[in-house]
Length: 457
Image (cartoon, rainbow, N blue to C red):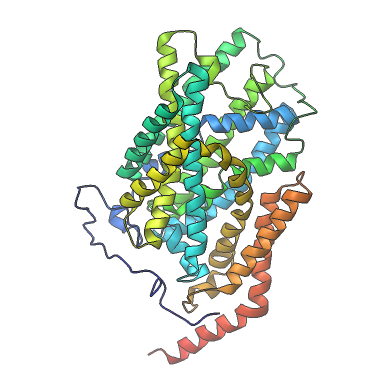
């Protein structure tokens, strides 16, 4: 290990915020550089709304439909359920860490990757989510252009400005947006399925066998698709669940997303495909927006609002993750970084380069779950050792375990895509950290703790 430094010492200039935590513009502080104080923690329902509204999105209906198109309805739902159970455990444990300490992802990562090393993992994830912000903002314009003929660049620009404005308000706005987005999704999904029932009927849904030439051809691949959909923000769940009053409340909030909201939204897409109502199930999956338009002007208007609110939920959450992460790395403010990163993302979306992001972001997503696995192994499974450990600038053991998990996940991705690469990466990183700690770090860490105990007054 590199020489010891105070956690968050020379690497980052800490910004001290008083207990009043009200910034000059009158909005509540987002606590970018310190744990959220107990008096500023939020009710469980508010934190749950942040997570519950995040996965209840049209994009998930697309993924769910693609999975069912390849595996059939029964096997597809099984794969979706398995993937959501992995997310429930993974995000739940990371959420408990955040709710117990009030720390955002960057602060949590410092304890494992080091006072300077954390910037690598936090910067990596914070950049990926900005890529997804740009992608989903571009998708807003593309969706409305394809469905209703709207001007795509202008729509993207309007959507981007709205998403930046909502994110600027902070966690409170994300909770309100989630509280609106989830019920609206459920209502319009029910309407769409109702139209399908009156048209094609739903009699063949349960027995739907899938299509042999589909993109998703195995349960492992479907589990990976399910996990990868929220690997980035799921790993950064601390940015949301640090606002919970306790670790248990944080877990409860994350469970509303995984398995509940994520499972429901993906299952809706599966029903649309299994009923034969999807336009291009192999690509667009269970996208049901087209089913809603053309019936009545009022319903079309609601569908348009749904696109902005629905995709806006994804965009604001991703932008919030990125802004919190980069504000801590740069010793700046979340709201300033929201504007800076938001403008960069909107420019990329308007320029059309967002269409190039998806494949790269999915490949980079292979390397994300091992980060969370290392955090969980270090701060949960080995918490007795880590709690008494001296602070260091970099912790090579953590980076080595991350590298092992990433290599294993990448190997599965490129050579055995039928298997669950995300799960393989998580298991490999966790086991690697345990092995490396036992061989190199465990004895030294215990020795340091014992020495400190003997020399303390």
